[in-house]
Length: 154
Image (tube, rainbow, N blue to C red; front, side, top):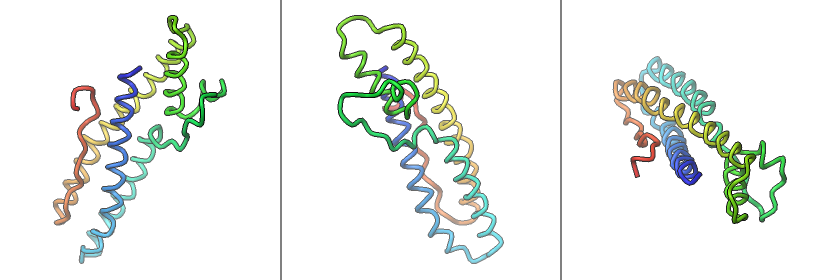
Protein backbone atom coordinates (compact mmCIF):
# COMPACT_ATOMS: atom_id res chain seq x y z
CA UNK A 1 0.00 0.00 0.00
CA UNK A 2 2.91 2.34 0.73
CA UNK A 3 4.21 1.85 -2.82
CA UNK A 4 0.82 2.77 -4.29
CA UNK A 5 0.66 5.90 -2.10
CA UNK A 6 4.15 6.84 -3.24
CA UNK A 7 3.29 6.30 -6.92
CA UNK A 8 0.03 8.21 -6.53
CA UNK A 9 1.86 11.17 -4.96
CA UNK A 10 4.47 11.18 -7.75
CA UNK A 11 1.75 11.04 -10.39
CA UNK A 12 -0.11 13.89 -8.71
CA UNK A 13 3.04 16.01 -8.81
CA UNK A 14 3.57 15.22 -12.50
CA UNK A 15 -0.05 16.13 -13.30
CA UNK A 16 0.22 19.45 -11.48
CA UNK A 17 3.49 20.29 -13.25
CA UNK A 18 2.08 19.45 -16.68
CA UNK A 19 -1.07 21.49 -15.92
CA UNK A 20 1.04 24.52 -14.97
CA UNK A 21 3.19 24.15 -18.08
CA UNK A 22 0.20 23.93 -20.40
CA UNK A 23 -1.40 26.97 -18.77
CA UNK A 24 1.84 28.97 -18.99
CA UNK A 25 2.11 28.16 -22.68
CA UNK A 26 -1.05 30.02 -23.67
CA UNK A 27 0.51 33.53 -23.53
CA UNK A 28 3.45 32.23 -25.60
CA UNK A 29 1.08 31.53 -28.47
CA UNK A 30 0.42 35.25 -28.83
CA UNK A 31 4.01 35.62 -30.04
CA UNK A 32 3.24 33.67 -33.22
CA UNK A 33 2.65 36.10 -36.07
CA UNK A 34 1.48 33.56 -38.65
CA UNK A 35 -2.23 33.16 -37.85
CA UNK A 36 -2.46 29.81 -39.63
CA UNK A 37 0.38 28.36 -37.52
CA UNK A 38 -1.09 29.88 -34.39
CA UNK A 39 -4.52 28.34 -35.11
CA UNK A 40 -2.91 24.94 -35.77
CA UNK A 41 -1.08 25.02 -32.45
CA UNK A 42 -4.14 26.28 -30.56
CA UNK A 43 -6.26 23.43 -31.95
CA UNK A 44 -3.55 20.91 -31.11
CA UNK A 45 -3.22 22.39 -27.61
CA UNK A 46 -6.98 22.28 -27.07
CA UNK A 47 -7.11 18.59 -28.08
CA UNK A 48 -4.05 17.85 -25.96
CA UNK A 49 -5.66 19.49 -22.92
CA UNK A 50 -8.88 17.52 -23.41
CA UNK A 51 -6.90 14.28 -23.66
CA UNK A 52 -4.90 15.28 -20.59
CA UNK A 53 -8.08 15.94 -18.59
CA UNK A 54 -9.47 12.49 -19.43
CA UNK A 55 -6.13 10.75 -18.87
CA UNK A 56 -5.56 12.33 -15.48
CA UNK A 57 -9.11 12.36 -14.11
CA UNK A 58 -8.21 10.04 -11.21
CA UNK A 59 -5.58 12.52 -10.02
CA UNK A 60 -8.00 15.45 -9.97
CA UNK A 61 -9.88 14.85 -6.75
CA UNK A 62 -11.00 17.58 -4.42
CA UNK A 63 -11.83 15.34 -1.50
CA UNK A 64 -9.94 15.59 1.76
CA UNK A 65 -9.98 13.50 4.89
CA UNK A 66 -12.02 15.31 7.51
CA UNK A 67 -11.45 13.57 10.82
CA UNK A 68 -11.10 9.92 11.60
CA UNK A 69 -14.60 8.68 10.81
CA UNK A 70 -15.01 7.70 7.16
CA UNK A 71 -18.40 6.47 5.92
CA UNK A 72 -18.32 2.94 4.55
CA UNK A 73 -19.74 4.12 1.20
CA UNK A 74 -16.83 6.56 0.80
CA UNK A 75 -14.38 3.83 1.70
CA UNK A 76 -15.77 1.61 -1.06
CA UNK A 77 -16.44 4.08 -3.89
CA UNK A 78 -15.20 7.54 -2.97
CA UNK A 79 -12.39 9.49 -4.64
CA UNK A 80 -9.22 7.43 -4.94
CA UNK A 81 -7.19 9.66 -2.62
CA UNK A 82 -9.78 9.25 0.15
CA UNK A 83 -9.95 5.51 -0.47
CA UNK A 84 -6.16 5.26 -0.13
CA UNK A 85 -6.18 7.16 3.16
CA UNK A 86 -9.21 5.29 4.48
CA UNK A 87 -7.71 1.91 3.67
CA UNK A 88 -4.40 2.76 5.34
CA UNK A 89 -6.26 4.05 8.36
CA UNK A 90 -8.43 0.94 8.54
CA UNK A 91 -5.49 -1.46 8.25
CA UNK A 92 -3.27 0.41 10.68
CA UNK A 93 -5.98 0.84 13.34
CA UNK A 94 -6.22 -2.89 14.00
CA UNK A 95 -3.25 -4.93 15.28
CA UNK A 96 -4.22 -8.10 13.37
CA UNK A 97 -3.90 -9.08 9.74
CA UNK A 98 -5.86 -7.10 7.14
CA UNK A 99 -9.33 -8.46 6.45
CA UNK A 100 -10.32 -10.07 3.17
CA UNK A 101 -12.33 -6.94 2.37
CA UNK A 102 -9.33 -4.69 3.04
CA UNK A 103 -7.09 -6.85 0.87
CA UNK A 104 -9.70 -6.79 -1.88
CA UNK A 105 -9.91 -2.99 -1.64
CA UNK A 106 -6.10 -2.73 -1.72
CA UNK A 107 -5.98 -4.82 -4.89
CA UNK A 108 -8.75 -2.81 -6.55
CA UNK A 109 -7.17 0.54 -5.64
CA UNK A 110 -3.73 -0.65 -6.76
CA UNK A 111 -5.12 -1.79 -10.11
CA UNK A 112 -6.90 1.52 -10.72
CA UNK A 113 -3.86 3.59 -9.75
CA UNK A 114 -1.43 1.50 -11.82
CA UNK A 115 -3.65 1.66 -14.92
CA UNK A 116 -3.98 5.41 -14.51
CA UNK A 117 -0.23 5.81 -14.10
CA UNK A 118 0.32 3.80 -17.29
CA UNK A 119 -2.01 6.20 -19.13
CA UNK A 120 -0.19 9.20 -17.64
CA UNK A 121 3.22 7.81 -18.63
CA UNK A 122 1.95 7.17 -22.16
CA UNK A 123 0.71 10.77 -22.31
CA UNK A 124 4.13 12.02 -21.16
CA UNK A 125 6.04 9.84 -23.63
CA UNK A 126 3.84 10.13 -26.69
CA UNK A 127 1.56 13.16 -26.55
CA UNK A 128 3.95 15.62 -24.91
CA UNK A 129 6.79 14.53 -27.23
CA UNK A 130 4.63 15.14 -30.31
CA UNK A 131 3.44 18.48 -29.00
CA UNK A 132 6.98 19.57 -28.10
CA UNK A 133 8.07 18.82 -31.68
CA UNK A 134 5.26 21.04 -32.98
CA UNK A 135 6.26 23.82 -30.58
CA UNK A 136 9.92 23.53 -31.48
CA UNK A 137 9.13 23.64 -35.22
CA UNK A 138 7.30 26.92 -34.59
CA UNK A 139 10.02 28.51 -32.46
CA UNK A 140 8.22 28.14 -29.14
CA UNK A 141 9.89 26.83 -26.01
CA UNK A 142 9.06 23.20 -25.32
CA UNK A 143 7.10 22.06 -22.31
CA UNK A 144 9.34 20.51 -19.70
CA UNK A 145 8.36 16.89 -19.40
CA UNK A 146 8.23 15.37 -15.95
CA UNK A 147 9.99 12.08 -15.32
CA UNK A 148 7.91 8.98 -15.92
CA UNK A 149 6.13 7.84 -12.78
CA UNK A 150 7.89 4.75 -11.48
CA UNK A 151 9.24 3.56 -8.16
CA UNK A 152 12.78 3.72 -9.53
CA UNK A 153 13.10 7.48 -10.17
CA UNK A 154 13.19 9.21 -6.83
